[in-house]
Image (cartoon, rainbow, N blue to C red; front, side):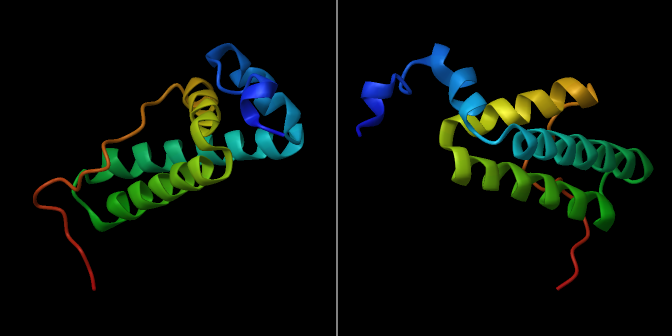
Length: 103
């Protein structure tokens, strides 16, 4: 069946689309995002350009990317729910100058 027939191309159908997913899975993804956000901000507060901060940024970026792979544009709804629960912002994905990297 074509997604357009389901109405999934319309913005107002976003919530309905996620509601069709396993609610327990979505809630766990939101909780995971909240934890990742809190961890990143805690590390950033300690050392904005430190290795642990950049590792936490990478984990958060990977989580968000996976959501978009699984749920496409609707993945951002999970991200927005995690932001609302944590009351924190998503960091920029660019690596700040002076950040340390281990290879």
